[in-house]
Image 1 (cartoon, rainbow, N blue to C red):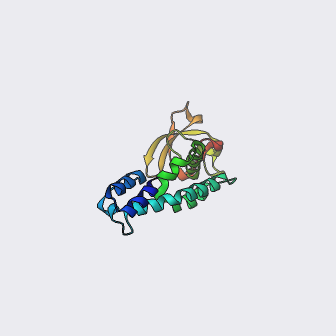
Image 2: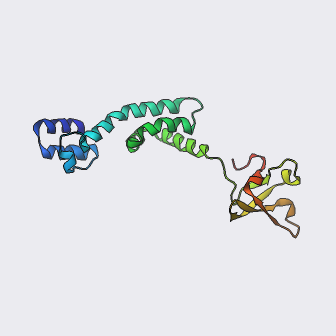
Image 3: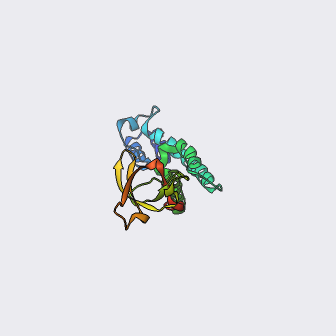
Length: 172
């Protein structure tokens, strides 16, 4: 409707109709938008909205592929970044939830306070021991409270994060 109003306003040289078209198209009715010489704000916004059906089609196609990853989605989404709010509003709840899940899955889990860990070196005695990260010391170091030390005097030890792994796949 906004693009039709824009075309009508241009043909009639009507500034009020151009202002209305700018508002409907979601752009500011600025003097730039009132000038009919491209690139006016209205013409630019109209161009963006013409891309919307293709953007939605491309994004839905990539999300429908089995084994779709965040990188697959992102490769397509970058092409339509300028109209993200527009296509995002057209996607279903399931599609937006899938995109959010793909983004979360693309980031590897980080050992942090509360993580259940074991030592990363399979030749070290703590490889099969279970511990919990109880404090983040910054600079990639953490304090770990080992379960087998609960009844002993020493309750925690200091480790670099790269010395630890998630215990038996927990927290992944």
